[in-house]
Amino acid sequence: MHVCIQQLTSHFSCRWNEAFQKEVLSSRLETTQLLARAISKAPQPLGAWVLVTGVAYYQPSLTAEYDEDSPGGDFDFFSNLVTKWEAAARLPGDSTRQVVVRSGVVLGRGGGAIGHMLLPFRLGLGGPIGSGQQFFPWIHIGDLAGILAHALEASHVQGVLNGVSPASTTTNAEFAQALGTALGRPAFIPLPSTVVQAVFGRERAIMLLEGQKVVPRRTLATGYQYSFPELGAALKEIIA
Image (cartoon, rainbow, N blue to C red; front, side, top):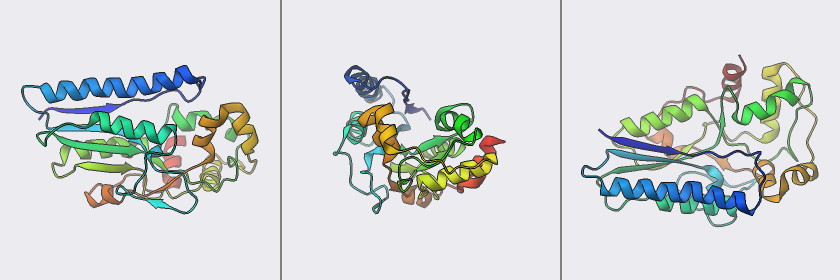
């Protein structure tokens, strides 16, 4: 069976100006449209086409809970990006099984989100960002890879899957405390929201100061079994 997975990333540390936003849109939409056209014109249909987007589709909230059927996608740059991205990937007909994995913050060794956090936390300078009350939807990189493999191998899987841990209802403050515990360091020095906005700018600050309570209802219903469902065990494996 021929399959295709598309996952694109960009550097959070890049200067967040109009040119970079256009580059983000172009890298996702144009590349995805090219792939979708190639797949639709292939002499033999692909068995599966899996796209990895993000939980930025869902509107940040301190109270709402989102599963795969929840509305979203039309309130800021990031949500509109995900909406357009998923639309660009949509294939006509049903000859190819299509899956969209909306990923949370990916935790793993060798960089990424954890890579940016380790130094201040190891120095005992870590803590919650802003109020710390915002949700922090996360997933261990091993489980993201596992969900992708599950989506490819299980013929009954199609549509949207939330690529987050079942325990991803963690708040930012709870995540900071868990990371401090894993490192054996205190984690009580907050990073004020005014500093975050001044350093990162308004658009990027949203990614840090606001969050979504996202649950993987359909992911679990399809039969996927998580290797790292709990934050403490996930961080212990990453830090070890």
